[in-house]
Length: 205
Image 1 (cartoon, one colour):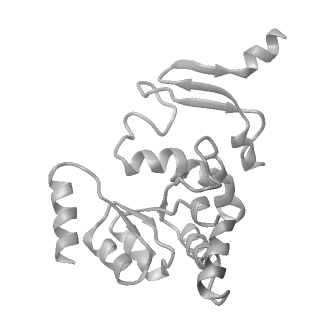
Image 2 (cartoon, rainbow, N blue to C red):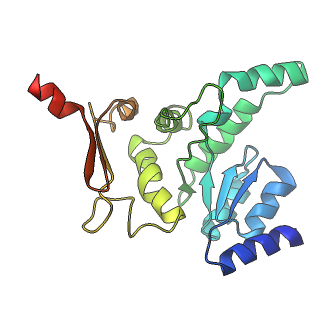
């Protein structure tokens, strides 16, 4: 704990954020006590720990899809003979956190898994809605407003406001009624510059 506290304190002294990758138990408790700005994964997260995170204004970044991939069950079956499964434990933790008023739950990618490659990060939104029971609006806010807060960039990104980067997407349908629409991107603007415009291409045809 003294080493972890020193790391977090020095990080803050230098004006940076500290993110702690933890599983559960003592390591998770220590990360929260030390004031890690983002608590990453936290498979074994408990209600009292979430409550402390809210009090201390810490953020929770589960990277949900990465650790509910089917091969995780295969590993658990092979390593424990089927006696233990991490996925339901993790689902319970994320669902509990998402249901707690005041929690700052982020959308992290974790796209280094064997079946979760870069470019498919929108699956995180769908899993948060369908498996952790967040509302679509709350999930979208997690990936925009909450993420911007977590990195200290609310003056630049996270909402559509004058003077911000103008990083925008448009999708085919309404993600508030079907969160999977975020996987059907039709328009991308980065820093005010149009990167992709399938809508215009379709209109020209």
